[in-house]
Length: 117
Length: 107
Image (cartoon, rainbow over the protein chains, first blue to last red):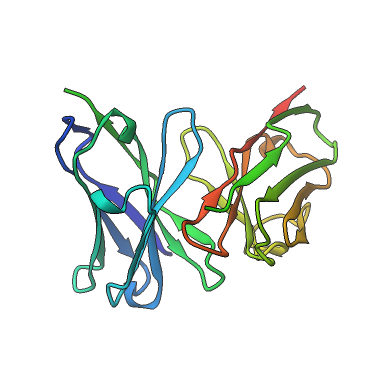
């Protein structure tokens, strides 16, 4: 079945860069769009951005100046890079697949990232 | 951005009860409305997409309706495993936005 797995450091220092990987298995990464979504402790869900296999990307305007989402189809992985992080970027980060109706139908388990010195 | 507002924010209810959660969009989103269920420590799970289409494997006691700016999620008879937080989400425009969530608790 389709599985997504996030990986990356759990602790990032303020002003540094947060980098995460989402490994996709059970389906061709080329057939779908893929998103990053985050959830701050006790807070709601925030869509970060999406990418397609052709590297067509769309970002949340609230983050676009600090954000890069990329894909490596040969590795069946896509990536998140968020620069100049602050405590406000502390959250559980999820990767997710879009179905053809643009809903997020498959999610990774999430990875907690804490921004702290 | 399209603002999504859910009501109520929380509700206490009992097994077997009928539950209705409302989601309002700040502008028309046609039928591009999705519902998710989230349990503590787990990722959200897609229940319903495109307003009323049940995701594969989701029990038929869940249903969705609405259009334009007002939408509802209904659970016809609450089961113990349905106590969770529910989120709506619009996929009409980017940035995709979510409601703040409705926590369904045991009375």
